[in-house]
Length: 294
Image 1 (cartoon, rainbow, N blue to C red):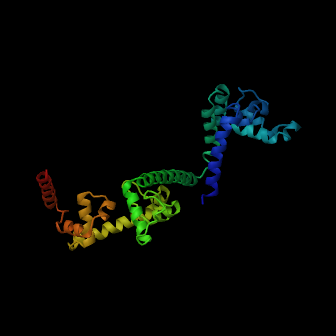
Image 2 (image 1 turned 120 degrees about the vertical axis):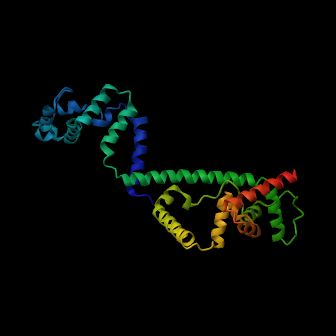
Image 3 (image 1 turned 30 degrees about the horizontal axis):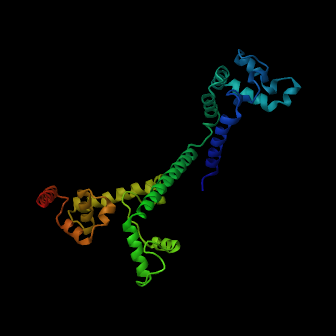
């Protein structure tokens, strides 16, 4: 669950957008609502810092200032600081620049109050959400396309025959299948779709960022063990490590390597293709075999 501060940050962003697009009549109104900050303090726009300081509600003898204390105090906070006063004056002079003036206001008043950690968490949550939705959309589209292919329908029909003991329903045509039966059978078929995989939370940007220290530590430990075993002690490669070197030398994707049958893997590992000369000889043989078949 997202931290409360992150939720408030997202809600504030949405509120800000609605405020800018629908409610806010002018960019200077975000400072003192519909009032003029200078009028609230009873000074002119050319007033100096000393005059503004004297206009502080605590030092203003006007009894009516007690009723307007909040508004006047806000106006004082805006005008006493040179930076925010300059921003306010600019907003008065350029009311048409709504987005720019609003962004400067919220950056000045809330930017330094926001914990960067919450901002980072919120950003990771948003990016991870978009990443997951994008991957899920691509996966569902790929599944829908595969289900339209004859190969998939044949596999589905074969599975139906296997479940029914080879008995088919003659009342139905060969191309028809009960929707519920089709859904149940499709769940049993493992779809191997190249180029896309079902989204996993472990692949999301936010999760990978959280486990980054563990990943780095594991990688350093693995490299340290590899260096000690094979570079220092010159031990023979285990079958798993030899298979890894073979897969990396051939530049075969991990999922494609996993789909290769064990006998072929064994043959490739025995060739010691991580040795450059062996790899060149292997590729030369493949090219020669390709030319012969032509």
